Image (tube, rainbow, N blue to C red; front, side):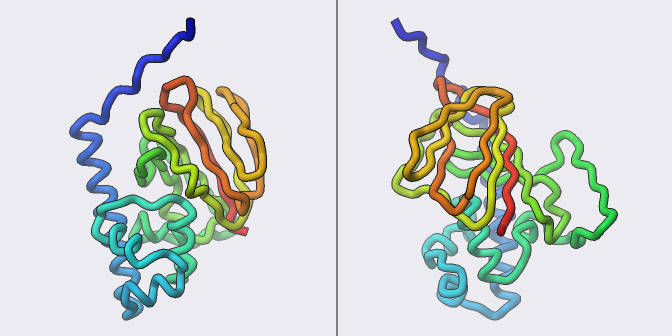
Length: 206
């Protein structure tokens, strides 16, 4: 008989409120950056390749964006993606040294992923480091693989993760195991064993 893992606990009211506040904060910064350039939603959609409806929902805090959509919008606007998470910051410079204490991150929660963006106050980083939680209680949209320029590293911190990449067999990773790949190929991560998983992901943009 197959052993079934316990179902993940539902989000608490406080967690739901935090997720909504994070979406609202992100949406305001996105809208401010667009309006500062005098652009309409249609103009930003044309420059970024992101649908008008998606941008509108993000600006209103109705939906959170995946990493690839955030990167598209940042490039379309001409800003560092970190500016979506922190209104103030400084560009990385030789000799820089920054420390992120426990709990110091900017959060973005989609249906399946919870992104914890590290060092959002540092602009023009060569790498984008993110902690994350893969939610086992949300199905993955396999008709919409994530893809973006650059390279990507993932290491599993807790739980089991299945990595799906277009044209390849799925790869299952356990705590301490990792993968490195060209992130221009479509990819998705899924929590395994019916339990949430914790991951560390580092992306480059070229």
